[in-house]
Amino acid sequence: MKIISKIVNVAIIAALVLGVSSCSDDDDGNIIIPGDNIVVTATADTDLSLLVSALAAADGDLVSVLSGAGPFTVLAPTDAAVQAFLTANNYADINAVPTDQLQQILLNHVIPGEVSSTMLTNNGAGYTQTSSTAGPNGSTISMYYNTSNGVVFNGGATVTTPDIAASNGIIHKIDAVIGLPDVTTFATADPNFSRLVEGLTAYSFDYVNTLQGDGPFTVFAPNNTAFDELLATNDMWTVPGDIPEVVLQNALNLHVIPSTNVREADLTDGNVTTLMGEITIDASAKTVRPEGADAANASNIIATDVQATNGVIHVIDKVLLTIPTIIPN
Image (tube, rainbow, N blue to C red; front, side, top):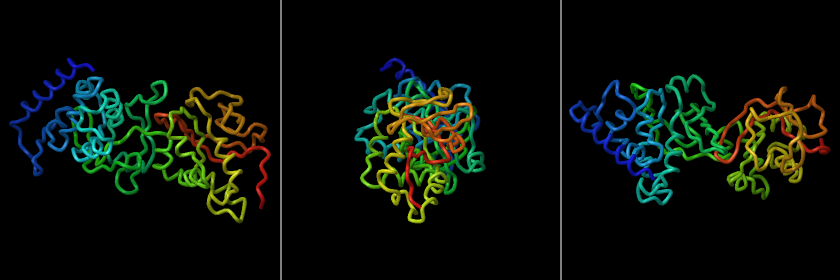
């Protein structure tokens, strides 16, 4: 695709390389050019050569995009990281990756705005948006970061060299390519969902495979506090797997709306059908509850629009249970 555009991009990169050849090297043999844009800066770094090649190969004229005004924050996989990605996915080289997929993967490494490692560390953990539009209906993909043990994105890519300045943004080198996330990516990456993951993998449930499917799904995801509150209702329960299988299965099904990607802006008052039955949404109050349940006991929607490629997650603070549900004390 876009053969002419790619030839132009390669020419641009070649010119950039020639333009920086006279500059001084740092201790690692990489050329440092203060004040140049992200593409020039990456081109000058011998550890980012495969990333630069990928920018030229992908759809979307990403060389021109990342040479633009910005600002951008680029999570830049090193050559070792890109090669590991190619090997793991049985690609002979960058040119073997479908160019449209490559575009979205690379855009998933671009955060609009300039985000320093200090800003991330001060926040501790949370979600941001990338420039990838690989979600249902072109929805922008989310990214989870956690700084409790280094700066880690989506539970699998760690910053190795932070805060490389460019004239139109900032680069953080990372040690792995960040794959496009499905719903389960965020469930496993975010420790606030560890109880939910325990529930999804209890018994012989096949939820993980289901939620890695095409979808789309809208998931109301109970956080750990929600599950701990439920577990505290029975002295025999210490983990979600202690909850009777049918009760847990019905509860999990009640949190998933199939075949739709309902973002916060599209939530409306009324009932919607989940895998288990009807739930009632109060969009203005930002609550959700099983149909027929007391509104006073509704679950609060405490975070919204965690967007994956196959669905969206909204975080809630209570586990939804089918009505009636008998939970022995």
